[in-house]
Structure formats: C-alpha cells, structure tokens
Length: 176
Image 1 (cartoon, one colour):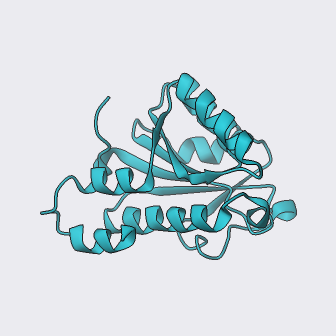
Image 2: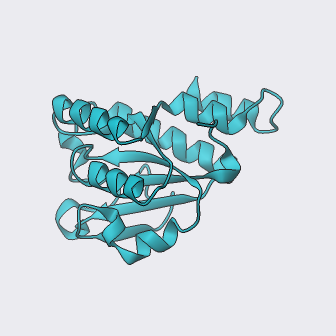
C-alpha cells in the first residue's frame, strides 16, 4: 500500500448527526477529530462528501460539521445504495472515512466500498458506536476485508508529506 496523498483522496463523513451523537461513546472526542479532518481537508483542497441517515428521524449533521459539505440524505444504511453518494465519490480517489455508527451505516458503507474495489482508510479515532464493543468488532471486520485503519494525525501528516508544505504550520495547529 502507498501513503495517503491529498491530491488522490476524498474525506467521507458518515452520519455525524445531532440526535445520534449524544448516544455515541466518546462522541465529543470523535467529533473533535472529525473537525480536525475537515479543517485539514479544507487547507489541502481535499474534496469532502457527507451523508445523513434518515435526517427526519436522526436530525441533521451536527453544527460543528454542517458547513463542511452539503449532506447527502439517505434511508439505506449503506450509503452506496444512494445514487447521489455514488456520484459524489466517482473516480478512483482513496476514501478516508469517519463517522457513525461503526457497525451499522459506517460499516455497511465501508464494506460496500471495499466490494467495489475502492481503497478505504478508516480513521479509527473519528469513528464511533453507542457501545465500544460494536466499534471494536466492526473495525476488526473491516480490516479483515481490506480497510486500512489509520488515525487523524496519520491522515493529516501523510496529506502534508513534509514540514516544508506551505500549509504545514496551519495543519500542525489542528493536531496540537
């Protein structure tokens, strides 16, 4: 496998929704890391794709992330069943995924993307479930099927590649 590259990546944010987040284990930290990923993506011109599961029931995207990208509403747990999502991720960019819930919408979407032969990088410190065990089992399953498990800092520093990058100082503030 190769390093992540900002020019060949898309950040995919799955279902960080207002009514869901209070129930997510360690939700505040996960949301902060998702915010760091969004800020880094904006600094480095990485396209962002965002979904919302049943927004009428689970609410819209949390305010901290709402401005990142227009959300693609879906009813299926697997975002790949939504034509607008497939259109938004068209191409062969690496897909850097964060979101909720690891064992439901997030997991089904990641597995489907792997089945479609996409490179999937799961940002484990920006992925959540209500119960830690569900997240743990989902991450192990995704890794067995070919997803790469990474962290927020791994993404930021691989996207930068060098301390000489013009956005290095700004990006460094995101992770410190």
